[in-house]
Image (tube, rainbow, N blue to C red; front, side, top):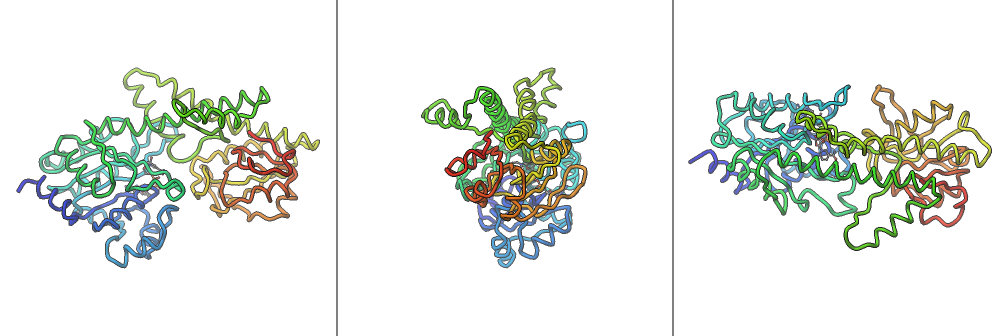
Length: 441
Ligand SMILES: NC(=O)c1ccc[n+]([C@@H]2O[C@H](COP(=O)([O-])OP(=O)(O)OC[C@H]3O[C@@H](n4cnc5c(N)ncnc54)[C@H](O)[C@@H]3O)[C@@H](O)[C@H]2O)c1
């Protein structure tokens, strides 16, 4: 029996043991989903606290209910560990570790490198290794492959290697109905056998697998998807800045344009980009493009526009206070929402940090409110605590800024009880009373 057929049979019978390296926003939903499909899953994470939480049957990721983890723990389908040696027992190993930027805003590949080194130490025949972390085109073949082949095992014969990008939309899975099983999965293998076996595995996890000719194509596909969002967000943010000067509601323009049934896709302006993907992934492409003597100008221009938005929010706040003959200095400003998008607790790279910095620079006193976030940490390690929303708080603040349009906020009530409001998300679109208090982006 070849290594290929040995592994293919295990996958076909769902006897394959799955190892997921990195149990965060991407890894935990994937591990839970594989467990629900009947695979035995071992989750590896460097954080002992996370491993303990999961093994207690609890989840710390919005889209994975604790009941699901508890059920998988009881049925024996899922176990978390910090012990990398356990990877040797896994037939399929999926890497879901972070790919952030370093201090000079270049790709920080240290997490991927460490995961690849751990996997190389435990590599054996008939294993499939898949990288899911978002990264520059070439990572799988330039960073992972040499480490694995240094063991003496041969890719495509002894073991198999592929890249398959994650496409989850954290916090939106239940509202929009997109889950791991109904979003098509792009797969690129280092050899034809690699793409075939990886596609066979993912066909047990998701309803549609899209094989492509190489890992580089799959890696670039993911970056292109995120750059596409980045550029379109910048375009609509630029339109918002122009509309502000022209005295036209950008929201009305977007809604009207969105009635065109073809050739238009709706994007919303906002207080600035946020999250782990849109502000970071374009730099991965830009960095790699430089190796080819190429400047990704659209991507860089989009970044320039998107980073301006918190400054525009400050301008709108000054305008809102001015209507009440107040200055920013000494004013009490309420930030409604810390998370970078609605209905999640994720505040990574959220625009709230820059907005806070700018308002504080001008002497404002800030209180932040977020029903999903109890406390949050800035890059410099400073921890901020959020305050529960109350009528007293709304009434005492000189201005409230809607930074995140969480569904849990009662916008009618917020408008009724606030002195002045800056709405950066058009969250108050249906509020009829008190509109004179609102300044919209
Ligand atoms: N969050 C998203 O919406 C999203 C969507 C698509 C793709 N991605 C990509 O997926 C990757 C993971 O992102 P995430 O949001 O899940 O990150 P995360 O920070 O939520 O989780 C990563 C986990 O990996 C663990 N970890 C780090 N190094 C490790 C190692 N060597 N071995 C084992 N565990 C390790 C960390 O402790 C953490 O629990 C990134 O490349 C990201 O760009 C994220």
